[in-house]
Structures are given as C-alpha cells and as structure tokens.
Length: 133
Image (cartoon, rainbow, N blue to C red; front, side, top):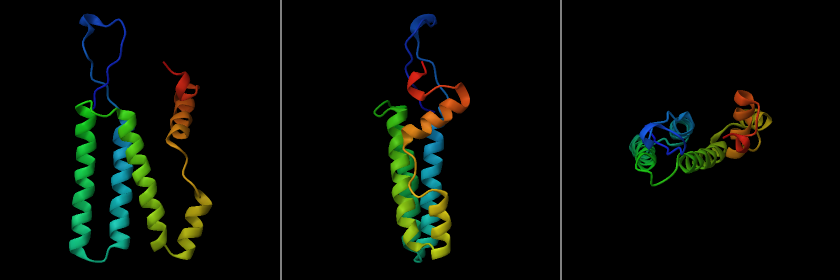
C-alpha cells in the first residue's frame, strides 16, 4: 500500500494511509500490456519467462519505492503509463494490418496521464484534476 502525506488538521498530526488506485491501476495496465506483448511477440519460452519475471520485478520495485516515499504515487503512475505506452507502440509491430487499423482507429496516440487525471476527476468530481484540493 502506498502512503501519502496530507497536511491538515488531523488528530495527532499522524500520517494516515491513503488507498491509491491510481498507482495500482497504472501498475496493472503496465503489467497487462507487457504480458500481452510477451505472449504475442516472444516465441522463445525462456526469453518470454525472463521478460515476464523482469516485468514483475519492475512492478515490485515501483511499489517499494512508492511505499518508501522515494518516489511519489504520481511519479510511479507516470513511469508505468509511459512504459505501457512504449510497450503498446512496440506491440503494434507484431499486430496484423487489420488489428493495427482497429487499434489506431480506437486510439492512434494515447492520452497523456494529465488528460486521464482530468477525465476521471471531471467524471467523479466535476472539476479538472488541478483544481481539486
């Protein structure tokens, strides 16, 4: 679980754990894209196994860094999102022409993480992400 420090009037000014689905979702999307890529693009079972174990290692490291406050949840999510986008771009080299056309029609370029934050903040709170307290 990642922790964030939130300043305010809290009893005893303690740190309170914050459930943070942003990082969890970013990690899951990164890991899912990587595993899909390995299944579709890597034919050698040993190479695929090594790739998969390295992806799991990266996921674990990002969680540990966030928990140790060496990176923020936002930094972890940004890293995972960028890595996912790179994997998806690489995966398109292994996709059929029809599959590629469908994927590009759906989403030629992925939205930025800031755009996603705004989209979900507006959906949930009716405001841009930056205007939330």
